Length: 318
Ligand SMILES: [Mn+2]
Image (cartoon, rainbow, N blue to C red; front, side):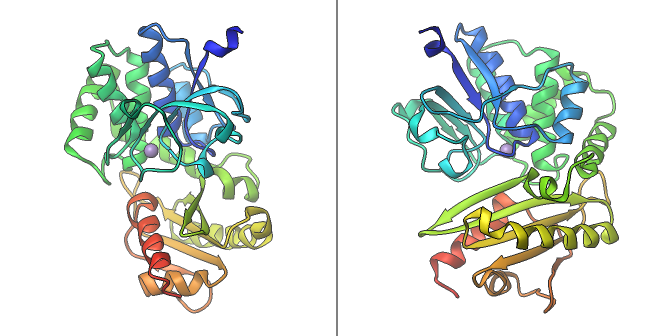
């Protein structure tokens, strides 16, 4: 069967720009090496990714919402809770990721690349160098966008390797005003177009499991403290009404204040579910007693919030 020879390169559910850009750029690289690889997404891309794709004249990858029986390479995730449905019954032949190592099984350990860099795009850039393959202008632009998106304009979780990738990609992509480009990306992601509150809530939503307990975190953005607070209340309503559907023990929302478009200001968090508020307050000690956790600084879900919650759950703190 011909379809047996297609290798799908896919990022996580509720795809973000790094996830989509990495899938596109890595599939492109694999095709240069003779593999029949294609980038796919689990669902519609977000507004930021849409803007970036349009900038570089690239079509949005096809949607694959059932992985069963297909062959995959995963980028930007490695756990079944974040993978396309049916991934347990798919064959995963490779993983490239910068998150904590997940539970997806791969037969060949050499086909797995994990490194704690700022973006998966940096690791895809590493693969281009490994295969000594020229990077086209549009692929450079995509990888650059993935890097900017995950590192909030090179302000967060940036390693030496990210910086090297950034400088090389910037030169190839010929992006004239990188700060303006990032500002447009930020505006796109915080605009949410015509999305309903429920769609906003699920636009960057991830599920985690620690010691048999599950928790979910939705990561959303708004410009300015007033807008953050308004969006926080709307997201709280969604969190409460969707709680049963999430099949989780605890739910959290991170609301980034994107006032400073070259980076980010503070953030809010919300918690709901079995002792979720108590757990979060035991970590950050900043619950306002009613609804909000208020932070002067912005923290990364991946490097700060998730590890802190996992640690608290492991310690059986509540
Ligand atoms: Mn990423």
